Image (cartoon, rainbow, N blue to C red; front, side, top):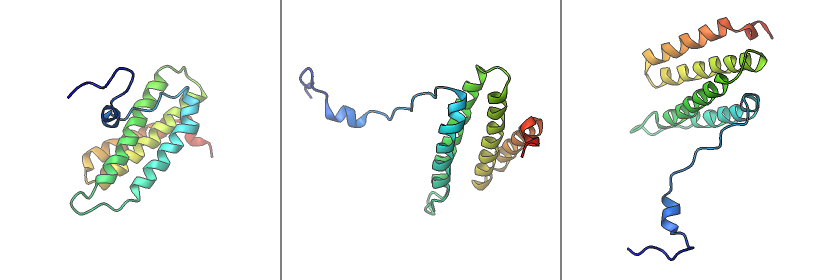
Length: 134
């Protein structure tokens, strides 16, 4: 197959290009207040999907990917933040993400992994000074 003329893109190449990840968040505070709530909305929508019998956890696995990416992003953002309110909020949100991951693994019948996430979540909640605030 001949290459397309210079200056004109091959329409098939664009259609087959992999989806790009969204740009990284500007700051931990913006990630906690803007991006994570959007992730939880997407997660909840996938959680409500009734999957076919042939692949009973398809949407749950997709939802899990959102949470796993959020954990990685949050860890990266928190690594560059000194102690303070944003860091504490980040730790509290990490505990919440671990709780959601635990529920996801448990629902998908992956109990040992679920227990690990439940334990990590509980540990972070118990260490958080924010747990004492209403």
